[in-house]
Length: 159
Length: 159
DNA sequence: CTTGTAGTGTTATAATATTACACATATAGG
DNA sequence: CCTATATGTGTAATATTATAACACTACAAG
Ligand SMILES: [Zn+2]
Ligand SMILES: [Zn+2]
Ligand SMILES: [Zn+2]
Ligand SMILES: [Zn+2]
Image 1 (cartoon, each protein chain N blue to C red):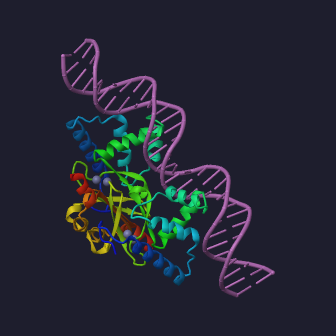
Image 2 (cartoon, protein in one colour):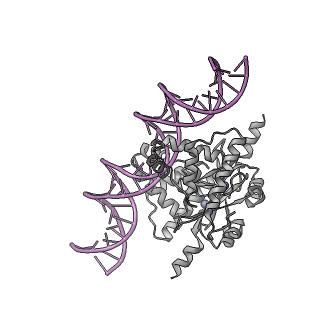
Image 3 (cartoon, each protein chain N blue to C red):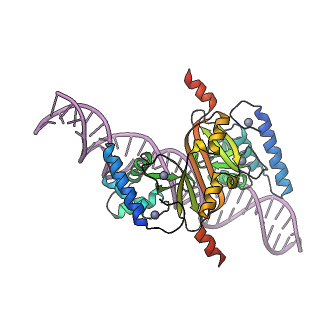
C-alpha cells in the first residue's frame, strides 16, 4: 500500500486493484464488463489523473467506443463502486489506491510531475468532524485535495 | 463572523466584504472596477455558490456585458485577490466569508438548500500538515469541501 | 417464451472555460 | 500636460467537460 511518493513496484498496484475489483463485482452481482475493466486498467497505468476525453482517446484507439457516454458511463460505474475517484480540482479521474476499503480519500497532487498520492482519512475523527459537529452539519461526502510539490520535484528544483 | 448555518444579519456580511475589498484594492493599487464590484455584490447576495453563467446572466440583464470572458475575468480577479473562492465540487463561485485574512477555506455545502458555510483551517497544523510532512510534500493550495445536510434541512426532513 | 433489468451505440446538445485580437482607459515618468 | 506602458474591456470564435435522449441488445427471473 503506497503511502507516499517513493518508488514502488507498480505492477502490484495494478494487480491488486484489478483482483479486488473482480472479487467485489462477482460477490455483489456487478458486471465488470470489458469497457469498465479497460478504463480501470488505463487509469491504473500511472498514479496520475486522466481526463475523460484522454481515456476516451485510448478506448477509441482500441475500438472500444468513440462517444463521450462510453467513458462517462464506465467512470460512473468505477466511481460509484469505489474503484476510482474524481479529482475535482482537475476535472479528471484517478484509480483508487485503497479499493475495497470504505474511506474518504485525501489527494496530494504534484503540480510539477502531476503524480497523485491518495491517502485516506476518517472525516468524522478529524478537524472536519469537529467543525461539522459544531455546526450541526451531517457529512455525506468529502473532497480533500492538496496541490503542491512532491519530494522528488523539490529535489530536482534545487539543482 | 459566521461560523455556522444559524441566521444572521446578512447585510453586515455584504457591507464588510465590500468595505474590505475597497480598502484592500486602494491600498494595493488594484482597480476595483464596476464589473468586478458588481460580480462580488452578486456573489454576496446569498451564502450560495453561483455558476459563472448565472452571474453572467445578471450582468447581461444589467448591460454590463454578455460574453463569458467578462465574468471569468472578474472572477479571476476576485479569486486571485481572495474576495471569492471557486467551489470545485460545484464548478461554481462563492464570496469569501473571511476576506482580508490569509486562510485555507473549508466549505460545508448543504445539498438540500444549497447554502454554503465557509470556515477556515491552517492546513499545516491539521492532519493534512502531518500527512504532507510525512510524505515530504509541500502544500501550496488546498481544496476542502464537505457535502451533506445542514441543521435546518435535517430538522425539515424529520417532519 | 415473456418480461423486466441492465448495458451499449449513437446523435445531439448542454454547461463550463479559454484564446485571440482589436480597442479603451488608467497610471507613471519626463 | 504628454506620451509610454501597463492594465482592463469588447467581442468572436473555439476548446473542454458532461449529459440527455432514444433505439437497440444481452441476459436472467419467472
Ligand atoms: Zn503504484
Ligand atoms: Zn480511494
Ligand atoms: Zn451572511
Ligand atoms: Zn475565504
